[in-house]
Image (cartoon, rainbow, N blue to C red; front, side, top):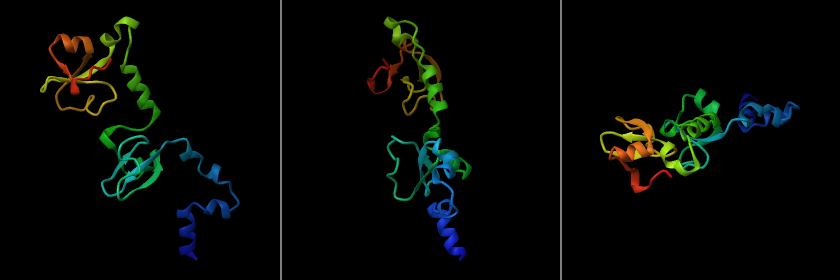
Amino acid sequence: MRVLACFLVLAGLAPVLAGQDTASARSDTAAAPQVWVNTASGVYHCPGTRYYGTTKVGRYMGEPDAQAARYRPAYGRSCAPSLRASLRDTMQVAAPGAASTAIKVWVNTSSGVYHCPGTRYYGTTKQGRYMTESDARASGFRPAYNRPCS
């Protein structure tokens, strides 16, 4: 009997048999984005990213559940909308004609390359600092992969 109860809990059928609505039973995880947890590496991936749902070993779960189970986000980036909002705040546009001058970029001071917001190495390299794209170009830094932000 215990094995059956454990199976029903894992399958998500326990609320149905108890007479509860499954939507209300999962209301706390429905608001959070579903992430793909690579159980072999302990890393979770956000929807729309390269490894979302594609690793050999893994499962889907809510982001808060993944964090509570001690899984870490891929590349140190959470899937939460609040993080994406803070990323949009770093892209400050002063005037329509001067869009490239107000975008904050991450300059890797050891390689001389700057990275745009939302890219893999934005704010993650060992040595670097934030500055506007126009200041980075004026200082002699070049865009990563020769692709300017604007």
